[in-house]
Length: 293
Image (cartoon, rainbow, N blue to C red):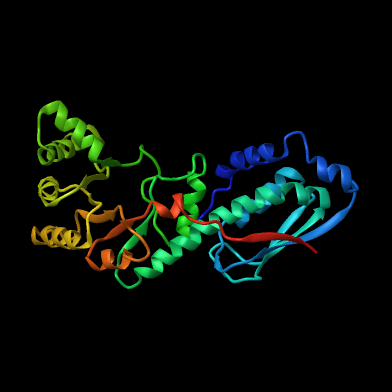
């Protein structure tokens, strides 16, 4: 399974606990005896892929080091209705105080991993990778991209800092400033990015039609993103790129208008990658509950 650097999540866990607890859990503190011990089980109520179990331990370590979580399975496991994810033991007050925060992390991340796995399964055997985007919950990007990897997907760039991706608005701005057509601006933009960044910087560019693809191919970027094109046009773009002898570079990626219903058709058109914003911005939470033993 992919690595999860829990230290990158600790500040987020602390913020979530502060958001939920404030000055304290007045319900549990008033109704539950202070020394009462309890155990509770995390139970899955629908089929899916689990992600985020280490965060449960992180939540309870922050709340009460004497309350512990013993996972029964690991991230990446396929769970069905009734699957036990593990048992919490310790202070009843602490268990109740961390319940919602733990479930919020687990449900959200497991939902992303589950949806990602469905996309990955749809393109199985094609050689095409499923990627995420930057359409993530503010502050949650590291965790959500971890969940993508748990589901079998591949991370796109983490942010604006780790690779060049020239998108349509970059091209429009450059074209307007230089009095160029879009295709001419694409060639210019790739050249400018290559000159302005360190050698070896990954450079990608978004294109919307065949003419723009030709302009991009002339500059041999690392990636050409075929944006919001129907499958037939994607197929023509792939054929053109391969005719030019570009077998390994650039990578060809589809983005925009991708769904579970059409993702395999895009993959079979011959692209290397398909990026899907819905993996993070529209994944439904997986139904998980905490039940007192």
